[in-house]
Image (cartoon, rainbow, N blue to C red; front, top):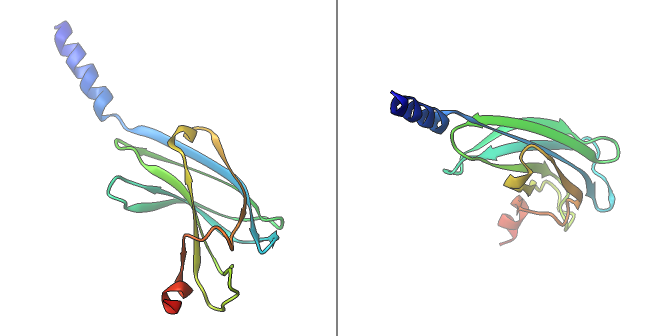
Length: 133
């Protein structure tokens, strides 16, 4: 009988969902000026690289933001801050620029300081680079 309870408890622990919660804070700039009213997104990616948005906020007048979100699941997800903006380093019009700031897993349950980020330098993808190539 004791063995049945131990097996049940072990299986319960294996299938119970884990809560991952992440908070990130920082300041965004565009060419040295605050990136005010800029949308900041917190996303989770699963092992198959499928992204899911869990929170969105706008930066303040000084470019600062704080964003938080959580996910309950049996698998571990990677969290990151995603910013789509128009702060092209070469001043080209109509460019869609993306910035990506990964949050270390060990920061789960804590506030991760993204720091002060210059969007014209923190480029993950730039649609105008496709045209220039």
